[in-house]
Length: 191
Image 1 (cartoon, rainbow, N blue to C red):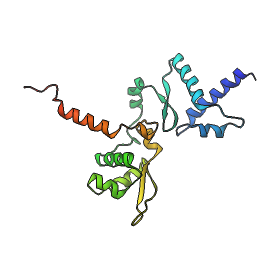
Image 2: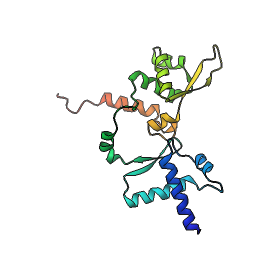
Image 3: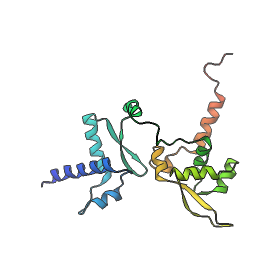
Image 4: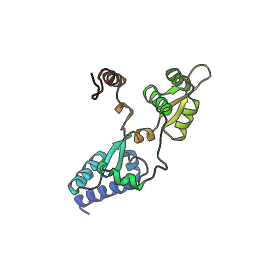
């Protein structure tokens, strides 16, 4: 088998792994699948992505949560939405989103830390986030009572389309956007 045909076979294998993986595909997962030196995932993905673009495929590859996943192109969303019902879709209350934001920005953080920022009891909200696998218990804090510490999960990154936690907007940027939106009068305001 020539080097060029071997490379094509590697790309087909990577594509099959992308297609079949229920989680994001990482270099470490690819390494497990190859006996004699796995291809570099980043390079393989670039080649596969170029092929998809040339062929104008209905899907593409996203980089999320430190790996890659196969996704449909955004322009096909209306048809996909029709196919899938809301069953199994994660919906979050305002309280859950608030707690999730605290965990994402301040984590690992204890329940007391979350409650001190939110100003309300957050036990049931944290339980919901754990059940939806958006947060996990990272360990215990040092100090009185050794409270549990919560952090975000890979599912959180995938759900929000992030590659890593540092891709979240900075708190300063959010504050600036909020203050700008409060200063700007609505466009349909009448003097």
